[in-house]
Amino acid sequence: MIIMRLLEIAPRFLPKGKPKEMNWDRIYQAASALPAASPVTVATAISQGTPPATSYVPSSTPNTNLPTTDETIHELKRRLAKELYRMEMDLAGGGRIAGKPCDCLSGKHHLGLEATAEELVSYGPQPIYNEIMNWLNRHSPEFEVGEIGKRPVEYYQGLSPDLKSFRKRLLGTENLVAMLNNEERQKVVEKAKEMTGDKEEEVNSD
Image 1 (cartoon, rainbow, N blue to C red):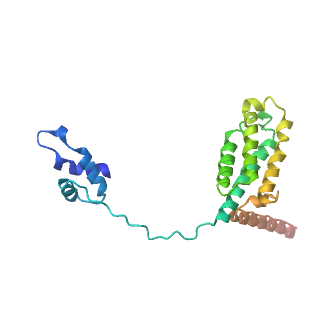
Image 2 (cartoon, one colour):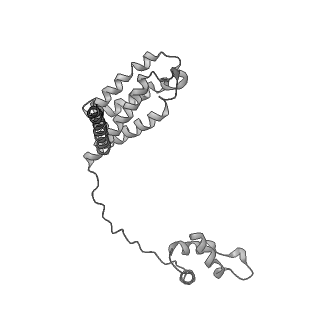
Image 3 (cartoon, one colour):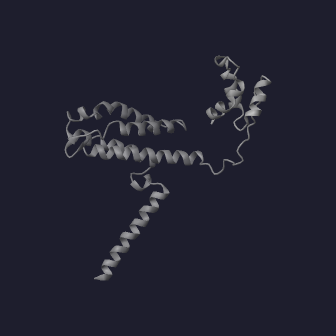
């Protein structure tokens, strides 16, 4: 939009016979200061030497119904627990797929774990957040594909309980349901009802 307005008003300020002396800085400044102004209004502002100021109109929509600090912390803990569980499953598989070393333990987990743990630290330090980051940094070199092939499956499986312990300390339970949000829980309930209904129909049909 700014470019179109510049092209529209620029000819008004082109010195006759001296196209290279056009003051593009003044034109751009005036056009930027009046996003909705007409070329005549901008021209007047430039001729006066001072681009007119724009007025800021604050949004009339109030910021209501924002999450509380406790709700935010709970959500971040839930997300961190899910990241831990994903890595826990990859460790239980020995860092392998079809018996072959994979990149399932590399960067994809690190970013989510570190970012979420660091965000939780900003709401108040808890020993477990730093423990998770320290654990991750300590073992990260071992999670590269080339390194996984040098170690037995059992080595990585032996690390899996560490993450389960972290999850339990974060959420107060090892129950996987604790990692679900309300929408996910509702889907589980609905699915369970469907499965129960199917079984009842099969029993009734017999």
